[in-house]
Length: 97
Image (cartoon, rainbow, N blue to C red):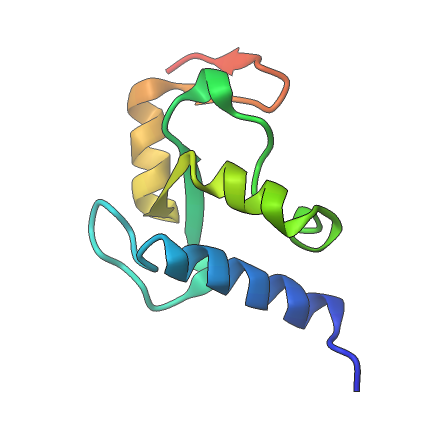
């Protein structure tokens, strides 16, 4: 039986996260994959968000390369980090802190 898109997205995200420690860099949270995300260390080098349908529509090598420019954070620590730094969107537009 073929793997569903949802199952494939979850598998790819899990593999990308595990390769980078599988837990929040700030607090160590690791219970739910849905609550972990990728934070780009250098926003000026951000190519794209690693999430959703991109996990199944982009070449694995491209996903790996983008994930290599990121740290893993839980959603709470990620939001707190951006509260300090401001948000940078894929188009380069910034939402100030």
